[in-house]
Image 1 (spheres, rainbow, N blue to C red):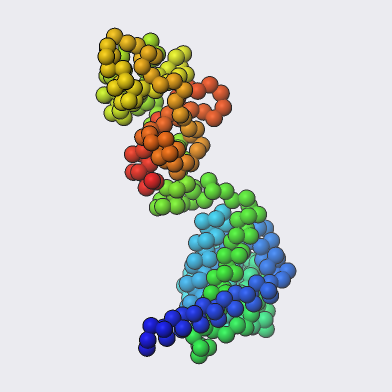
Image 2: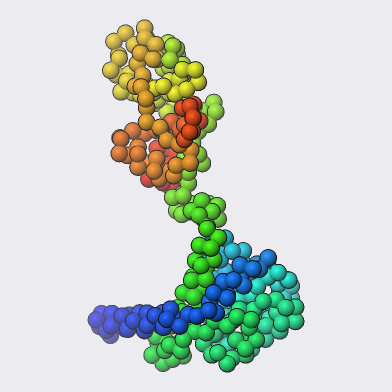
Length: 320
């Protein structure tokens, strides 16, 4: 096949799946709202299950729920018949995926929810299927053609199911007012966690801060710069940050430097940042001002130095 043929196939597949998503969106009704309310009313977890390709979608759906504030986990329907039914309990809600709604491996799991009155949300394309007839809430997928052309490979159906799961997760997330900080709590690792890190998460504290009093001799200031190793020292008066001494300040006052006090050399009213600011914002400020560090002060009240952030701290965390 030629490159153009491959591209034609790709565009056809995507167009068919996009049409399926459009039909899904147009066909949503009160059942979707009832599914969201059922999950919100649950005091336990959302148990998501499915077999085969639906099982892969179910795993992803459970992971998305869990990472956006709705406790959830996946239960394999075949394993459920061999003891994993014990993972479900009163207070949970069960979400089962099956395009046909007649997957035999789901029978024990569905029966268990009926026996112990655990709310069941079913997702399938056949409204008269066993799964949807047994469900407390039935979410019906439109009968859109599979994108494979033969109608036998789960393509459009799995795409629609995945999108429906994302819609549920986002509806729950927005109802719970799930914030970027909440998201970071669940994603401390990787690029997402780094991008949502706050200055207070990365800053140096306590005795690590390079600080000297305004009336201190420059000899002491140079010693503090050398010991702390940041190439800068903050200058304080009565515990408040009043200035900063950088390499540039030292060069400008080279003549008679050791006869001066820190307050004579410092640059007054230095740029600062607050602990709750995103570390990405701190990097942007440092890049814009062509500086390598920022002192951290409370957002409200006196400018008492609470921390110190160097550009290298951000780079080590994957921000930059």
